[in-house]
Amino acid sequence: MSRSGRIAIVLGLLACAVFMIVWVAMNFVGSEPGTVSYLTAQAPGAPVHLVMQTDGVVGTGAHPTWVSYRIQTPKTHVFVHTALVELPANSMIDVTIYQFDSGSPLRNQFFGRVTGTIGQVAKLNGKTFKVLNSYDTPNGQGVGHTFTVPSLNINVPLEGNNTSKPTFCTKGPCSPVTQEHTTTTFAFRTPSFSGNFRFQCFIPCGAGHYAGNAGPMQTLGYMGGFLEVRA
Image 1 (cartoon, one colour):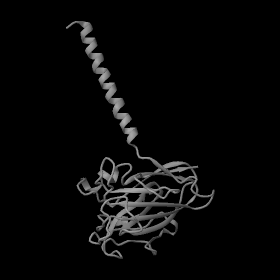
Image 2 (cartoon, helix red, strand yellow):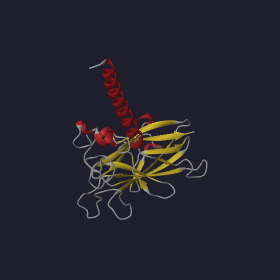
Image 3 (cartoon, one colour):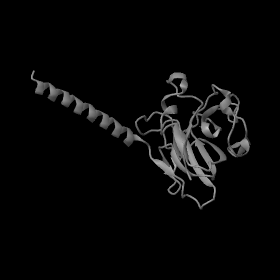
Image 4 (cartoon, rainbow, N blue to C red):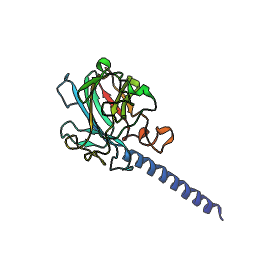
């Protein structure tokens, strides 16, 4: 083969490699979940009411059978399949999480304690608690998930639901009006500076994954996301 022929082959292979790198990068960027913004959802200085839900089966996206968080849009009140949310800095955040998944005993009882919230407490279906004993929860269904922000020392356990109930949600988005769920509320204050603070479910569950802490537990937009605080 001539020298020019070899050069043409090398250049062709190089072009293919560049194309593949660009294609992978574009798909990665394009697959990032959208962000729900609460920056202007309330008057300046007023508390932010952040509403979320956990679905045992998300029912959409690249992994439709995975468990996932959803964020409610503040104006249209639609639950969006994402785990990225913008919050104003130095603000009180009142959180409501509708938990639709089943539960089980925690592998590590550390995650049954409420930390990082105002008063170090949360409310489960209206009743204040500091610790959720996953072997003896109020409705006997263990813990479904946690809302945990390690860098802000926030951890709140979310009680599970009875899968035998006829109104148990089998695929998201689930309805807080018509389907079986637990409601957990709590409050915390965002830092006074901008930053991205990762949150994740740390039960861990993630059946079928090593130590139960992979797959949806560590995938952006499912059980892993970011509180994007903006000053």
